[in-house]
Length: 194
Image 1 (spheres, one colour):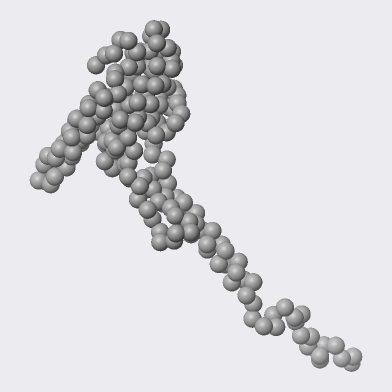
Image 2 (cartoon, rainbow, N blue to C red; image 1 turned 120 degrees about the horizontal axis):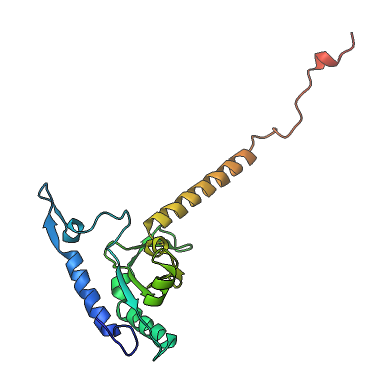
């Protein structure tokens, strides 16, 4: 797919292709035990991360329209494909005071952007990737990470539990039984002169 005038495919074309990828990733097949598994798992090795394999859009901005045209195209693609890459928010906890949760990326497709020039100049392992929803150029490992997923929530929850345990321990140690702040009683027999 090419769009020579701006070096990036039109947003609606990328959105349509992303919809096709999503339908493909939802296909099921049978594993060796007869259980249903996503068909794409037979084609791609496990990545150790939640969600589907990423779709990379490599743009060749050229000189006719410039970098602003490329940014506009990227923003248009992000808007058109938000439902595909954004994940769904899962609210955790009961309190309204401090709402918390995480994004579930199990059914999301990461959409990555880069330019041919960035790849040729810096290579694919450098910070040449822009992921929809992240907001900065990142390395491939960073761009594929989900910093607001269930693992991040679990870490925050563990930190809260540790802080609460410390707070409770501190409160318990300050609650002493009555009279414990008095100095120890002297044994009067020791103080008598012989």
